[in-house]
Length: 82
Image (cartoon, rainbow, N blue to C red; front, top):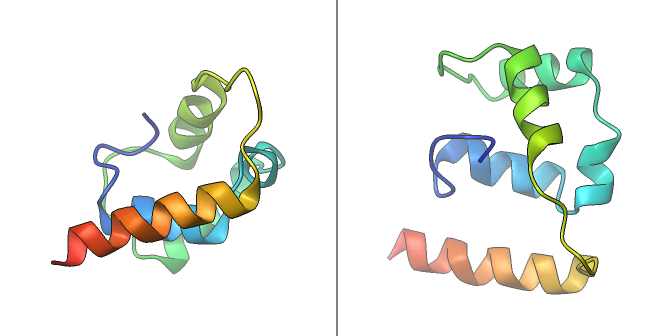
């Protein structure tokens, strides 16, 4: 897992900005650092550590479409807010 909790503010912001594995795959350390700074990340992991975790996440055997992923995230976000 990249962030400690999937329903954390930073994880949800990440999924909003980078909704597909393809969009996150192009990230570099500087861009991750900028993302963390923009979102006021107060975790104890550096951008390099976040990027390493991101790259170590297992890939799905069949890619998800952005529509499927977006729908799933929207449903999960709705559950978290209630």
